[in-house]
Length: 271
Image 1 (cartoon, rainbow, N blue to C red):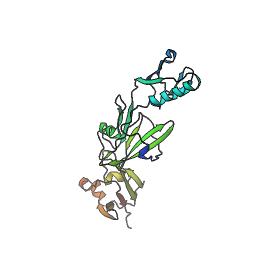
Image 2 (tube, rainbow, N blue to C red):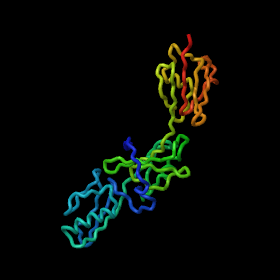
Image 3 (cartoon, rainbow, N blue to C red):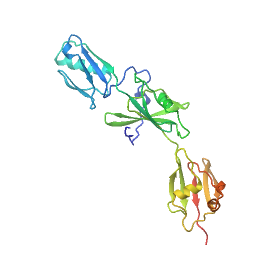
C-alpha cells in the first residue's frame, strides 16, 4: 500500500479532474500501440516499464507514465516533425490496461484497496460506496485525497455536500481518507501516567479502563471520588462523580463509558 504523506496542502477544486474527463492517465504495466501513418518502422507496441519511460526510434527516451494518449501523441508528433518527418500523423492507443487501484482508508466500514473499472472512471463518491460508506467514526466536513504527482505528495481536500463529496475522478494509486472523529480522553491527577489516551476503534473505554491505561492510581489517589468532566455545551461542562472503589469491588454498573473529549480527574486524599 502506498505511503501516506504527512503534509496536507489544500488544493482548489478547480484544479481537480472533474467527472467527464475523457482519458486515462497511462501507468506502468499498460501496453500501448504507437502508429505513424506511412512509417511502418515507427509502428510499435510497448509495455510501459516501472520507470515510466520508453525508448522510441529517432527520438530516444520519452516519459510515458503520467500522460494521456493524446498528450503522448502530441509529444511524439512534435519531436518527429521537428527533425525527422514532414507533417507526421501519429496515433497512440491503449491496447491492454494494467490493473488500476485506489485505496480507501479511515472512517469507512471496509477500508482497503479497490480495483478501478476498465475505463478508469472511479469517483470519490463511488470509492466510498465500494468501501461500505462512511462509518459513525467519520469526522467531516472533508474528505482527503492523497496523490503522488511525480515524487511530490499532494493532498486534495474535498468539502462534503449533503454527506457525500462532489463527483471527482480518482487516479490510480490515490488514497481516499475519511478523517476519523477524534477519540481522545484525558486522565489527570493522581495516576502514574497522566495524559491523553485513545478510545479503541470499534470499542469502548470506561473510567476504570482509562485509569488502568494511565498506569493506575498513585498511593495518594482518592479512588472513591473520581470525577469525569464532559462538555454538554461549548461553554459548559457536566461533572460526574464515579466511585472506582465500588467498581473494583464488583459493582461494575457504576463504571461510566467515556466519550471523546472527556476529562477524568483523580483527586488526592486529604490527610
